[in-house]
Length: 361
Image (cartoon, rainbow, N blue to C red; front, side):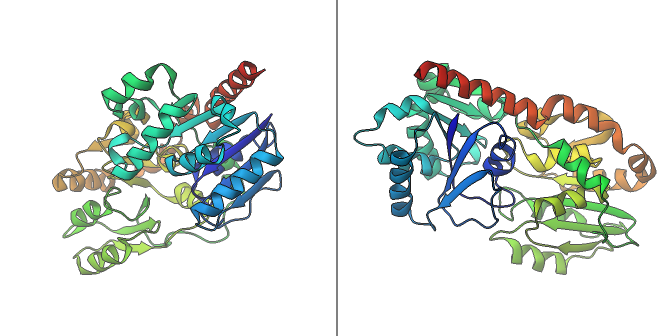
């Protein structure tokens, strides 16, 4: 089977590469085309190319790939690359529409208006439309479900537990938190309004908590958050480490006591699934994607992220029950693997790919 995968990026955190391409590198002959330059070197089993940020270059690259290779499946991971693909198959390769799959990696209300419009066109044209879980499916507006509902398939997001096991087996030479940190808190996510790191920083002001909070990620709000963190009155040390390789992020999860996400919107966040498997206690905003993950009750507190007092109470709970939290790290592992393993996700996608291939024969 030959598959063309279209995504905006190929980097350390891109789901189309880390979950899909790497997960299927031994089963499928894959070509990975991205709009933006690659920030990491792809696996030798996966052919990759990029358009250096140019839509025109992506158009001609797709023209070339389609001419040179006979693809069995085209998997589209963003509305923008999907639109360029549909333009590239005009006028003589329109039959490829019947080989397309689109995955919506987020909840609908999280998307910008432009991306919603692009996604609508792509979702209408594609043969199959997958959503990253039931909450993502439920977020799609009724009129769009009416148009494309019969070809929509919710597929639960999956994380690679074997990768975490390997990293845990070979312990990092350097600690990722200060040795003297009493409580180790971790927040993973892009620095933007939706990820809502500011709500946690606001809750820390005046809080009697000893330990360290590490933020991993990059984004437009980073400097504002750093400045705000410097201004608050809190005994907790706050560290911003930027965007790190995925393995390093997992090392942080394995060392942290608590993983926090007060996000206002998500797809089905891989970092939360990984953190749960790595043994972190979870403090999560009560949004549908987080509730879909539903860790064991003794390992998670759901809060309304706008309620600063709820955030404070959750952090005080961690402080007062830290020993139990440290001892019971393994409780969530079975739940995570049973419901959210990457293999379970990939098996579902392989079934979709094979149905497309069989119908094309």
